[in-house]
Image (cartoon, rainbow, N blue to C red; front, side):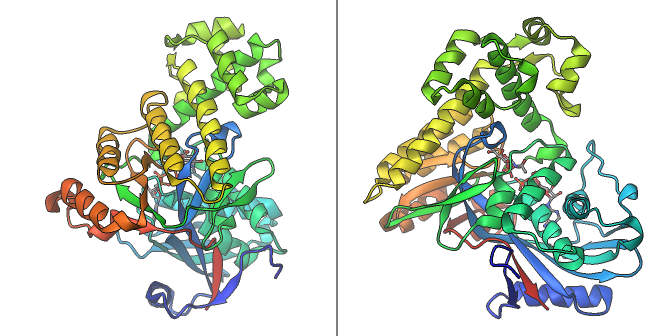
Length: 460
Ligand code: ADP
Ligand code: NG1
């Protein structure tokens, strides 16, 4: 196998979870799986809600992962089970035309089907040759917490499908691109950060991820400092709600209006990053363009239609998604301002990490500014996240911000290693009292993280 494909290892003796998964598979399907795929979740250090506008982001993989144990069957069936009883077993024909992903009511198995479809479509596996698969899933990324459990599930599902039925090799980058594209079958119009870092991560390294094509550059983290993840205990399932796509659509409309006002064919633009490239402007100049051409008041749909000189059914095709078609109001100035300023912060963060020694105070300041922008300008935070990030700062963090999509989920904080004990003590006593945890161990909602390895396979 090429070094550019995900590595294949023997089952690791240090991870009891892998052995346990083999045992569950044997119990369920009567014999061992052939392979187990594993794909990690991620924490994004900075660069929120800009990947889908074409801008680079700065994540690192975390230890927590999703594993899928699998083998082929000759029944032309996909038989899916989960080690967690909360996720009910599911069975369907593996014929591509019978696979339905219900965007109005996404279920856990739909993410597995996304990964399966991504690989099958890539290779156009002929219907009569398609094999079935028996799969057992074990997820160790907290769901709907901004740590990318959904993409870890899609990526691990695509990787096991690739290993079991693909006729030829794919690189990690190919797999990442396939997973960015196929996760959109669930309905959310994400940008590709999560799947990219899941495949391209390396132990000990944070990465700057850029797109078109997907590429990853190493990022030097400050010596003597740690990143701590804390969960605000509020959750939001992205695909079951429309907040995420609403933001994507607001950015798209802002892009299209700016394109029109700049004398371009607006229908040709969907991402602010593409518009910036076309105009050949700096991020600062794009911020001035927003000030010049967009207003802070909410745009009504009518105003958008009049500005773009477009009919409602045409706007549906060019700009909206199924779950945003009904929206009547859009904030364009604020969303575009966030995207350009956040992209600027990513570039600054990267520059700071290139200096020796890395100035952790500066990184922390950029993280705080990022949180303020997601809270006030992009409006994707949550009151509990705002309280938690503030508490983290008061407990010694140099910077603290929401990570991932937001509207709940986790914060990431940068702390000096020497403050670790006092930081953990203060945050755990002041935010995570026993009853709030509701039976969850503290180690699942407050933990130090360091850059983990990317997706791989285990031969059983
Ligand atoms: P995240 O920010 O973690 O990606 P999402 O809301 O996008 O959150 O996706 C969470 C969804 O992913 C869950 O509702 C569930 O359908 C699926 N999921 C996550 N972890 C698991 C798991 N261990 N087993 C099955 N499905 C999972
Ligand atoms: P999470 O936190 O996994 O819901 C989502 C998107 C990312 C990115 C972030 C916000 C998907 C699969 N993931 O992440 O692409 O846009 O929000 O920065 O849509």
